[in-house]
Amino acid sequence: MQQYHDRGFSGAVGENVPYLAREARGRELAVMVFGAAAGKVAARDQFLGWSVQQRAERLNGIANQQRVSGVARARKDLVLCRRAPAPGPRFYGKTKFPPERVRRRDSLAPGQTAPIFHGGCFRQVPFKELAPGYWQGGARRRPVRLLVVAPVGYRTSKNGRKYYRQPAYLLTTDLTTPAAVLLQDDLDRWGIEVNHRDEKEILGVGQAQVWNEQSVSKVPVLLVAMYSWLLLAGLACVGPQRTADYPPLPKWRRGAKRPSCLDLVTRLRQQLAEHPTTLATAAAPPSYQTMVQAAAA
Image (cartoon, rainbow, N blue to C red; front, side, top):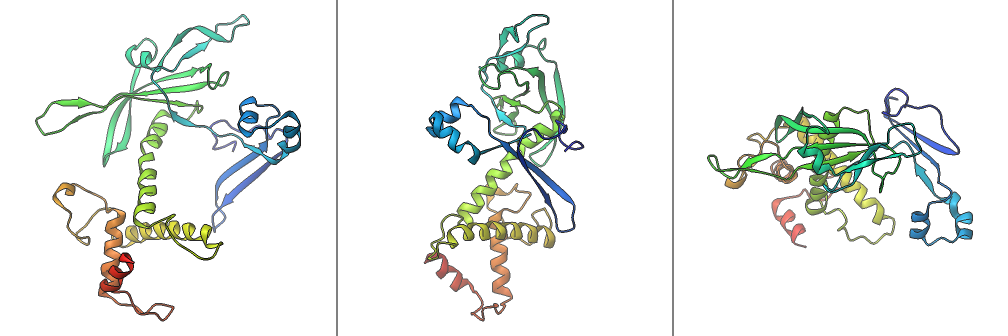
């Protein structure tokens, strides 16, 4: 944690339970630390419906995840401020400003660019950065960092008018990680959305009808593992690009550069039909007819 975490590590405070994840060869992959919960948090106690006596009895049953930095979208009318100048008892500065003002005025934060991979290639994305700032109504005295990403231009036709999307406002508690890394992580979040959609709509995660109670938790895990195996098999056998090994695309999707999950499933079905294999259960090998019947059942 001292070497890789953006906030370093100076020793644990209070009761805590650390977890260290390693791969099969022993290489360290991740670390997570759970610490004792805060004694008095009004919002938490109100949400849980705890009285003072219930909090004293049940507080040792919950934990806080420590040393976590978040990156979240923010409203353009959020109220931010700087630290009040010393000396003096005041902590928050008197001048308040929203993220929208940071975007419009270069005096608050100068414009910058960063190479971000998005849409199949690297692009120079303009943005502004302001740190440290303070969100009095949210993070309170914990310093935050504001990233304002300029709107991206696009055209509906080759020679048509250029339109612009809405700017993005990102607020993070990470004050040291390069802005290019945070912006790339934010744009990569779309892959997570596609992951969830494919697992639910194509593989049917959460739709299995099972008899055994233990299967309720095991079937989704198996389907997610199958999804990972399918993607890894596609990368190992064909590569990351969409080649002629896959069925031709419709006209509205001719520009696709990568195979989708449905492309991989279609290719797998073709291979099973072209190369019948006796299953380990000694059941009949699948065919197009049995696949259609199973899908319609």
